[in-house]
Image 1 (cartoon, rainbow, N blue to C red):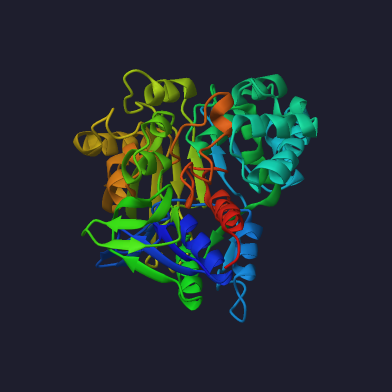
Image 2 (tube, rainbow, N blue to C red):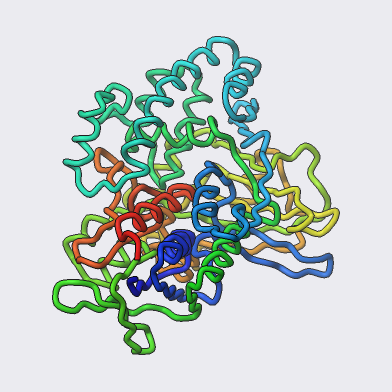
Length: 487
């Protein structure tokens, strides 16, 4: 039995804590915030009409089998479902294109059928051809990358050669290049390229192997958790506490303690030292190697930040007829969005893609009202002074929504603004970059490894292998727990 300290009670931290406790270790989690969940945040706004509750992080639940395996494997005599109430979404996302057309995504071949109905048989045939390739990329990724530790470029290259699937993975090609070689309809290309932003990347520079991301969503389906996705954090916290994990909130970690040549615990912000046999950092890898355990060489490799998010939380009077759970409104010039975010210098996007989540769930909104989570891709804090720009840019985002057919300004009960600066302050993610390092170029598939160069220190979460998003974060927790082993 080892004494394990986990830094951070995000989904990765809670997941690895539960697995390690179930394996017989003594686990303590230190979380700087007063609540758990990390980037899986929640915000409740009380009004005279009632309470609005928003998920301020992920809004789509995919690959539910990953969470199911985590909860079942740590259950013992506990509820193997963790009490999660999954609701399948159809459409998964409604896409509004600049020409006025719309397309509702769905799981499996139903999506190709909808493409055929909306854009014609040629477009549907193109999508099915791309989808066969996506299936090969997914199978390769799942078996040999997403569920296994990958510690070096040589290991990644060796896996690809051994699998003989280089043609599908297409090293050296971009997601944009792949889309343009398979999809003749520019709207489908735009839809495909949006998935690069799921890793915080520019599709013009993101590796073609990120085709696995839309496959995971559109083959296995998208889901909502009744009461909000934040209920996943509740379920993980309950599981940790039932397994004897000590979760300490309001306790920031200043640094990782080192004795000899290995991690030996942590130093808290109040100066207290807490010893451990193993330390797991559920923090942005750049924060780990820049501040918690200064390693300039590792930190320099992580300074190219992914995109961030500019968020509006809107409380609205009345209901919007025909509104989907998730809706994306594309701009006329998608390239201009990435030019602004990743340009020199970065800037707010004048005409952004707007993603709206509006859960039709009485548990998160008053009767007769709507709560909208509005997300716009944004450059990180630092290059852009988001606190100074926030109010004017919020006005701009509402104006863009109005231009695209959804003017809600006369229905507003309230609006709250969250910028990359707020995410940086809440989670200590440098720049408020959602996904850590941008997934660009050949190195875009290789996140920082879960096993650090310092013996006894492991990294978990969306900024490290195998990547961002709730299922991948939970998979990273399984990889780390397996590396540490049973107590």
